[in-house]
Image 1: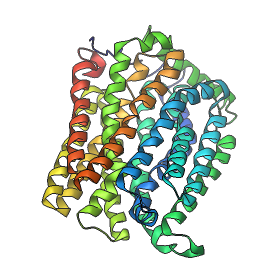
Image 2 (image 1 turned 180 degrees about the vertical axis):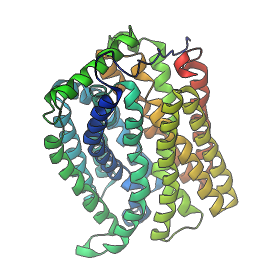
Image 3 (image 1 turned 90 degrees about the horizontal axis):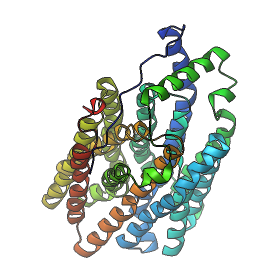
Length: 447
């Protein structure tokens, strides 16, 4: 299989009369207008996606469900993700970002609120599927949306900040979830886990309505940009297009390209590790004796703080060094080592060892994600990029379906999370190997 090469990066400035400082001001203003709100939306998406991990701590006993039932429900989210992500990106390209993000955000917010009233496994499965179906397309949609506004050499740090909201939501959401479950338990004859779904779903509905009024679909439609600022955006994007040269435009041709298939496989391996941290992190820590909800919330906040540092720090380093291959591979390998150590410390019953290992895995696994997403747009464009981003993300996220089910089934059968963690660690380590073998070998941009 041929290596995935990445063309040389475009020049930092287009050849026109404007100064470097003037352009920096324009793009700085643009980033501050778009990125904070998009980051908030992604933050809320992850709050609503993973609050089930904390709800599980009491919901399972209340409803008398097994870990296998939970694993299936946690994983089926990604089936909805898989089926609806490509259509969602096509709709964004056709109808615009603000309508698409409004639809996505209100949909998952309402679904999250309805989770408070699940009583049967079937209801749980249906709502988790709908959660994935509504959220599908948000991340690749935003990645696509930013290509309309920012050239690649300005997009890396912005994208890293956006993606890091997932780790930030885990870091802040863990103690908040624990507090809500304890403080509201019994109010209105509802359990704490029910209030968790209700309270955390409402902000998403509000954010969805706000998206329609705060976002502009393209720079040309942005009333808050002057004509001169719009010219800066057009010229830098045009310069980048010329510098990148010929790229694949056809979606179907790109899907036959082994490079795209390899990118899907690499991200599949990364997602397997990330889904394990997200959906089973609290349960793994609880299994070694941290049973107080508030204490568990703060422990998980510390673990996920390392994930946030990994995302922001690795994205910054990658941009500064103009390198993606080693920054992706090393981070994925670190994540796999963390899961391996977690399994070993679980067997010893070491609380400190499990917490430290999960923090290490969080640092590496989450840190690999924003750097990885710098690769596809370097050799795909037009329709191939619109659909390709969604295909890569949706197919690879099927790992989020398989890994929770694997852990749930093995835990139910063996009584320990260790066997499943060893398997997931091996899968994630494959991502590092594949990146080094097939991404950017021999290309200037990837060295």
